[in-house]
Amino acid sequence: MNMKITVGDIAACEPINKFLTALTEKGFVSEESKVGDFHFNELYFLLSSKKNVNGMEDLVIENIERLSSYTYYCKCHWSVVELKYISC
Image (cartoon, rainbow, N blue to C red):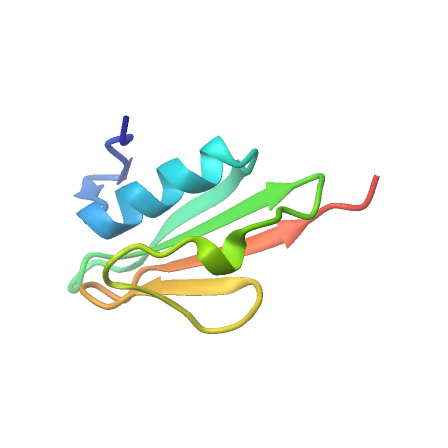
């Protein structure tokens, strides 16, 4: 079930909702969310995990592009999701 995510008054796009739902199911926890640009509804999310998550390469969601090992963005509103792995 996809979460309906909002930051302030801005609703996240469907690709970001799907991506964040998938990450949460893999054990990621939200640390930060903020509006990057009000005009374009651009959002920023930082999620963390205490373990290295397998299968991230196989996580494919339409309009979500991987920029680096830890950074993803959506092509529709340029919202950014950063991942952080915490050492125990």
